[in-house]
Length: 204
Image (cartoon, rainbow, N blue to C red; front, side):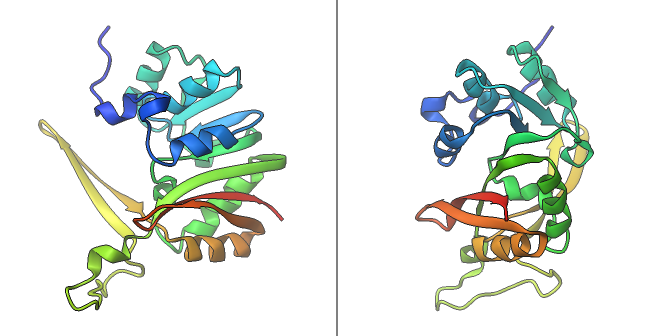
């Protein structure tokens, strides 16, 4: 059986993982749901620490890879179809992407809130990509056809196959506003030098 081909970044160890993965994994507690788990590197680290972790992704290839790597609770599942409750929800590697749009964000957050046990937490990272639209004079050129500059459409191609999907980079202030709308407290855990951040969301 062949392991599905994946970008090497999704197979990184804890020592070499993404900027916000280390502090998020350190904060993870209790039962954990790894949302959009990819190849399962975050889940594998947590499992090695004796933490009960369920790994979900909508990609069958990703979940097959997780299973081959020893994650027995890996499942092909959209988080919007999840019903089990957890102590920690992990949404890493630009976890705000699953919101897809600013208008859809409160709807997704409200569902994630239902998946939290008492005193549970959501750990999510994202970036404010406003800098991408800045010109040499310090002004900004925005796409007026978009409701929010962080909403993007990605097209991926592999051989003769192609797929387009919506993805979003959400800045912290708008994340906080959306959390307020659904009764979640939004705390800035760490902020990077390039408009990136890690946040912790808890029930109010």
